Length: 150
Image (cartoon, rainbow, N blue to C red):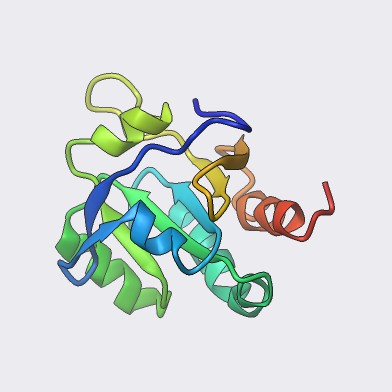
């Protein structure tokens, strides 16, 4: 798994609207919090994503944007966004290639690990963390890092 100080790999994936999105384009607007989740529309992933949604003003205040990535299709990501009014970028990584670059791909048909990476505007990983059970920790810890509290 990528760790603090590593350079985040450049990638291009389709978002929930079918538009291609690159990490470098997102970083132009400030830090990016990339969170990998196992599967859209499941209870844990919904709780985690909704917590990011609920903290939108906090992320805006530090100039950062959350970006969710899973192996789900563009259509499933779109439904996940619409069903939960998430309002931030969800990326489809169906072959789990980007998950592999970040070191969160599980072997075989298993879903990706639940992990979050705070990436500075220069593309450097500022922090990473993983918790399969504490859904709120991902957004909370990302904000702590972005605020300089840790």
